[in-house]
Length: 110
Image (cartoon, rainbow, N blue to C red):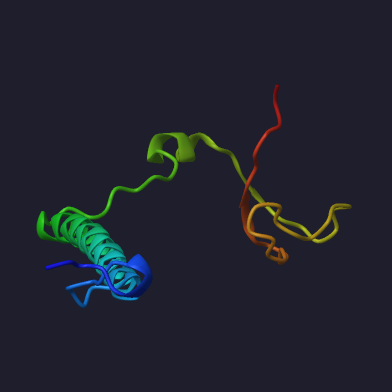
């Protein structure tokens, strides 16, 4: 039996066409990308959750990244007076200074 039709064109015995193959390829890529992002976010959230649980379950507070207490005690304290000829604003927190407020004096040095 000859598998050619009119004018010598081959007869396809299956129903798989390029359009069906393209559709299967697109669906496969969507599934692969979705799976990748699901696994990525699952791992990220699990790591974040584990860090939070470890910080709270150990009973120790979260590590303070501020200035050491001994160093903070060595910084001189002054009391603000509104008669001073300076801007009445804190350069760190940008809050307005009030008369009689206790401030820490940061000395500029090179």
